[in-house]
Image (tube, rainbow, N blue to C red; front, side, top):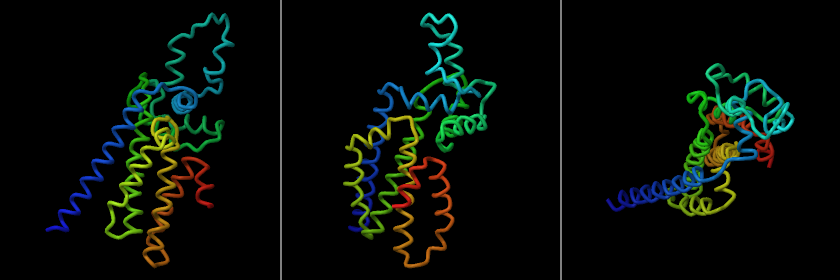
Length: 227
């Protein structure tokens, strides 16, 4: 009974810690002002087939008087009814931008459910989901290193939550939190394979999907994988 209570207490503590972390990141996400690369995410994900992005070309519009028609901005940053679920346009833009397509495809898919609407949370929700995934992977890695020591993950989750760069991953509408997840998954698979004492053939499918998804998220994944 004592062991059961201890296990339940550990689970409750970890759940509360993760919920506190997610609540803090969500608060950051709803209070920041999106701009720069974060705004560029929506251009790459939702803009129709157009290379002259409005951010750089509006000043060259004929008879420019400092105003831009709202329809132009709407078409640049949101999904219109006529181009919902148009993943080919995402691929078209990423060939120019030289970034993999997975994150932008997810942003476009979410935006497609809300045509002609803009919210930075359309991308932030992806960060939140993968942040939760990283927490679960941290718990898994610590359990491998210290069998039965699930609670050892608590300091790691707490310290990461307090790091400004980690908070920035959560509230930046870019693919870096997603990249961090696949790097953590890659590390977890290494630990799992070594701990099993086997050649790891039963892990081949997870390895395949991890490397594939990581490669489609950012080319930095290759740098992490190399080291």
